[in-house]
Amino acid sequence: MDDLMKDDCCAPKGDFDLAVIGAGSAGFSAAITAAEGGKRVALIGHGTIGGTCVNVGCVPSKMMIRAAEALYGAQSARRFPGLHGEARVADWSTLVAAKDDLVATLRQKKYADLLPGYGGVTYLDEGPARLVPGGVEVGGRRITAPKVIVATGGRPAVPDIPGIQDAPTLDSTSLLEMDRLPESLIFLGGGYIGVELAQMMARMGTRVTIVCRSHLLPRTEPEVAQALTEVLRAEGLAIVDGATYHTARRDGDRAVLTVTVNGAERELTADRLVLTTGRAPNTEGLDLAGMGVETDACGAIRVGDDMQTTKAGIFAAGDVTDRDQFVYMAAYGAKLASRNAVLGGAERYDNAAMPWVVFTDPQVAGVGLIEAQARAAGHDVKTSVLTLDNVPRALAARDTRGLIKLIADVQTDRLLGGVIMAPEGADSVQTLVLALKFGMTTKALGETIFPYLTTAEGLKLAAQTFDMDVAKLSCCAG
Image (tube, rainbow, N blue to C red; front, side):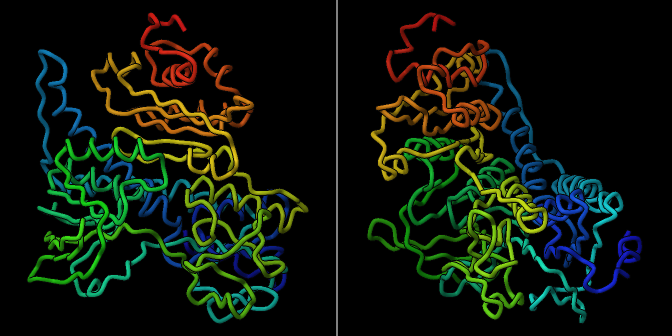
């Protein structure tokens, strides 16, 4: 495959309309979009093709999370009278090998095998790239192109804690590559990645502690954060929130983290510290400053709504930018960047109806504004909070962990946002996405017909909760 791709690298210098740096989801989206528009594209990769999502992010983590759900599902069968189930990790290395096989298959089918079908794309994997006037320098030679898109992605960030470099640590990548199941782990950070992987490892049998500066999922609704905290604690995870990090160190083969909580200093010990405190953009060696490309305080590339950087002709997309850190938004932003760069487009990035999902169990999914954002934006806000013990689907499943919160404007009754915490929250949120995209009111959503005994029906009930007590309705009466 490498020879096939490199055979096409004899294109004359200057014969490219667009150079794309990065061969992950964003890079492929940009290159394919331009190629479909008849443009010649240099797609510049470095390392394993496919980027974060397929190799070390979404795909491997979600398979392992689903495996952990299978374990939990068997063990929780007892919530139904007359049932008893048990499951355990019989062979960790075999499970990891199956994960690696899935990753390799999707990387081949969804990335490497696609390239021969796009004659306008020349794939170059000759080392890291550097921006230069008029194009890109890679592998000791200059690739000239009037427009460039930077899509180099990101990597797990290392928190600024004294001693962290010497302590035994893992990140979201190396955690999924372990050859044995650890007895104990301390997760630093309670954001999306931290809570997903922490719950997964706890269900696999590891003793897990999550340490965070504020609380779990700090960017979502506080009611949801509290509910998830209760769920994880009920599963045996230790949650140390409101913590101040002091030091980390190695003690033999183990990791020691010193924190302060409620004014008292605590020393926490585990086999490893897992660093899930955020991600850092991959910008080293690009010479952004030399080219006049500005970055924010975290080092991410600043882009406008047209995905262009502060340097004319240079665009950026995906996790390397200051925009939304989701693979589907990376691909979306890259498509806009490509259209605007070389296809005469004038499109603008729009995330007003962007769904997001946290793959815990229950899943947490949302779209639009949370209550605090809506108030900050000047809306006169009304809210509705419906716990899942009011949703027939949850009652039938004997699993009422979770809630639904909707936010709306008092004057217009228009929906502004919402969050669903439910076992099928990831699939149900798309109904709310469409409601926001097409400007629905709470009244319209509450009057919409939903199938009975579905999680999505909870959205109808939550909308009706603005004006009535749904507990007083008979089945399907709303």
